Image 1 (cartoon, rainbow, N blue to C red):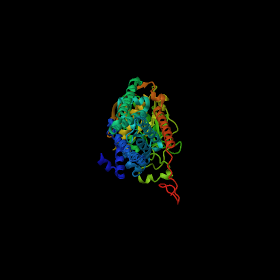
Image 2 (image 1 turned 60 degrees about the vertical axis):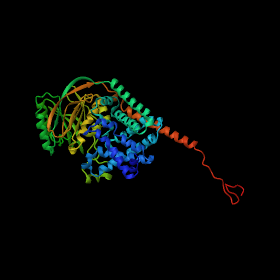
Image 3 (image 1 turned 180 degrees about the horizontal axis):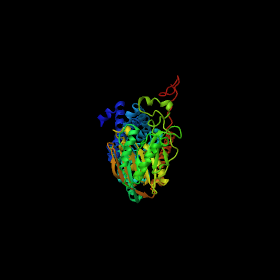
Image 4 (image 1 turned 90 degrees about the vertical axis):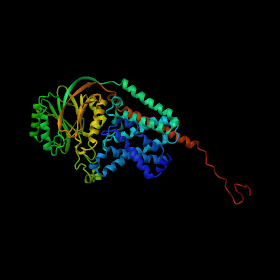
Length: 521
């Protein structure tokens, strides 16, 4: 330990260690998908900040670790944004600076049981505050929330139905804090073990008492994934070819991916007729996604449009939350230079104004979303409250084909399904396409990034309302209250210490005739 401490005495080496420690949690996400790793992945980072020589240095370690986490989580953006990826990671990483200071404040040295007990709730709350801030779509949205690493763990999905992905993040951080205390502070093993037992008890209670979705039927949904094809015309031809294979398959709805149609259907009645012919041939409506300049209003929109046997049904959803730099450049007058160093959007896409619930036939109501909108729990929660039977995400991720991004994106749909108690279809152009049932369980097999095919899924439908849909982000509200109470307590404690501090001793004044040592002389 002394050797390690000496090695970390160098600020540069310490910063490098913080970057590496912060990047470790990414192994819990797809593609590695080591879900169990999430429960110990923060421990090296916490131990580093705990042992920092000062709170200021711990804050810097938090920033460096946050930079490492954001770079590891979004490394697939490098070919897209180039050097700007490092700038974004540094800006977002700064969110963890205050968290690093909190870790040092609560766990440094030989912390008392009171400080450790506070750390078990304050540090997870601080982490949730960070996830809340970076969930703003202008900062890239809630991609890579810690709780989303548990997308394939059934007990975790049950917890998501109670408190959303937020509750999973809170519990994972609490476990990491308890493990770090067990490793570093032998005298504090009792409160650390108590924290682990409390977490296990809460998880077990949620597992036992959380309501399960009531299955009340099923529908046959077909996903059409054309694969990597250059040019909107060639892509459309391949999608038509694949869709015709569904004739006679008795499907209820056919879903195409994001940007599956590169022409405005209002300006191309010939294409609208071709899609209507496909709908008649297959006996099902087709949910396409148009990425084109509109003829009825200015600008380029990404729109989910339903086509039936008689043509356009009028059901249309315009994407509301756009990808920063991918679909628009924030503060373009200031950051427009990003288009010269990467593949940032040359022209901003236009935003839709509201979510849409579509009636696609046979009393089936679906709520479409486009691309990274599926990362936002509030969108699926709102659609569920509006009465949808099924959630649909149309995506592409073709730009990031040979990276972890497609699998990371597909995994998010499992969380959204579990949170809402509604099945979710994640249809893409180039993979990964996936379908999940009302409890977040996988339905059928994925269509990988090497597939150009159609697949039919027997999707179970459910009714009822999950606690998360009813109560919303109560975990976040509780975390903010915990932080407010702790901050107030710290303020009162600091004020009391200042008031109780002894008055500084003032040395006796000296004159030319006497001295403090020998008065009167």
